[in-house]
Length: 239
Image (cartoon, rainbow, N blue to C red; front, side):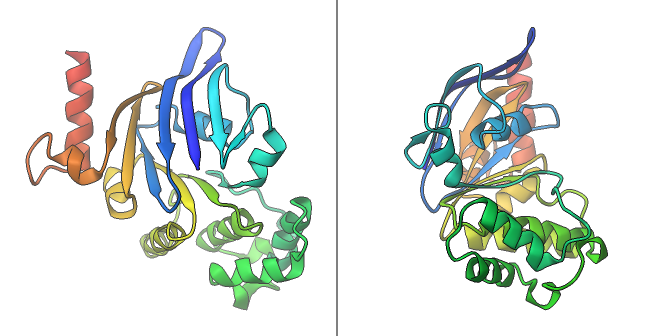
């Protein structure tokens, strides 16, 4: 569903993303891990068509993000780190707006289905300005899902919400992974271990390791955490 080959992004002399190559299959939740500034958000913006790559290719559901951008973007649902909302719209008006922007034929039904899927049906007539941060995050999931894309790209969806809502978001991501390919970025390593089938660890724009969390832990000791794995990898590269 997602095929990335030699992906590079330059901003002047700075290389933000450096020769990334990875894949994510149907029904797989893949975690994109790394500290702040590792290049995760830039990678996701390229994968969703928000910015072009300097080099390399991105294929989404068989469509090249540069050569066939419109069709590729139709197959992606994107939840950015900061959900863009219109505070004077209701929940339903906002999701319906996105459904119509994306040309969904059954916009009304798809809107109600997406709202129900993220447990906001009882708030569908509530103004967005009156929603909590956690509910706005759920609303972001609804707009990403409304056109039923095969690929979902989620940029640090648990940032800034309380612990109860973090658990709810993680459960939502796990459930979405049954029907979608999910790329899920985070800098919280134990979060990826709980949610993801496979992880890709980035540092300074490069992939430094990838595999199942259990496989990466085996490089150290049976009880090692992903944080131990990451620190071990970074220290090895510096030595």
